[in-house]
Length: 184
View 1 (cartoon, rainbow, N blue to C red):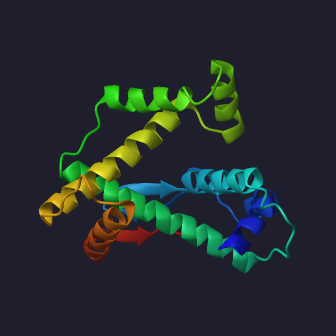
View 2 (cartoon, rainbow, N blue to C red; view 1 turned 135 degrees about the vertical axis):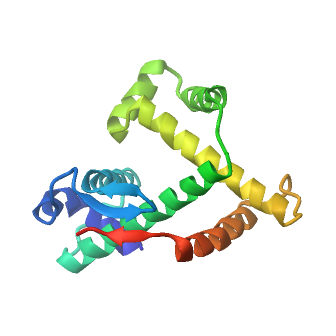
């Protein structure tokens, strides 16, 4: 996986050769769509993370590596959509106040407001998109808590591994039942 991060530095320069229209639908998941733009955004975020973490060494780049990384991103997006659909089915919603509290907590990690805005700019993410990512993370966490409750496990003492196992088991089941259509 570390090897794939090295590819990211070159991805933005090479990837447009392989990409279609940004609004092109790539995958349908139970009626939800994943577009080329969504995939490209996630790939750009991975590139930024690799640059921040210092994993920017040059290695030979080839089409297979780019496609492998792209497919990993698509799989991750499919999983995210399926889990969010399950959150909707189960009525899991996060109140705006909770999202705002989490956003404020993040903002408080920066000594000055401008540093937070610089972080957003450097990360190529809007405050609205960040709030949406907070909502998604909290929704999936609430889903994990529900799953642990259904298994009669003490969710208050459950660690991240137990939560991830519960989500993985549910995701495996949901993937088997999902209507996933590749549009390419």
